[in-house]
Length: 199
Length: 91
Image 1 (tube, rainbow over the protein chains, first blue to last red):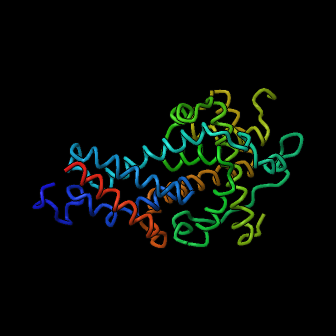
Image 2 (cartoon, chains in turn red, purple; image 1 turned 90 degrees about the horizontal axis):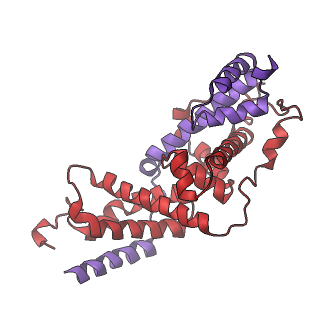
């Protein structure tokens, strides 16, 4: 490495400063998606390893943070791909049987959605709400969480998710439907109904 | 008429699907008619969109506004050492 380029202003040029500059950010990014601290640590390390071998190709026009985030996203997708191959106890649509109880036999609402009085921007700033949301996310089965996080927090299309996790498109849509239904219901009973009691 | 009618359970499935793919013409018409008449399914739709918006906000900015979670010290040191060793070898 060329010492005259080792200024802390250019972390890409001096990888010794990467962890201090981007470690916490990347760790939080990974943790909020894979929801497992030791896996998140490994992903940060793998991201830096990949970045070390690719740093000569880094185009200094793009922001370093964006660059690292892009590498990490690939690593997270790989993480879910590997995880999908592991035998897991959970059935594809397990853990959300409660959803079926929301409807009667004719498919009409039995437990009707309550009125939510909420502005996402404002709620998002409330730590208590985000904690409830995170707890609800933790309630998803591992397979449902993989699909939902890839779709909504990594921004993959269902086609891409099908390839990564080796599942059919129909399966993917069913899983997303159940994940959303579960999360909606979880937020309703753990947050909204304790605030709004209106029908 | 019956052909165009979906029940609430079917409608919730279509509402989710519509966030990931384009529905068929038949589904779009049936869904639209149902939503005009059913305030609970309309509510469900708004709530799914709320959920998506909140998760997207969380995904886009969560790392910046959540200052309390940090890379644990042992991992921090381990990764620093690791980078240092790789750089040493590549000198």
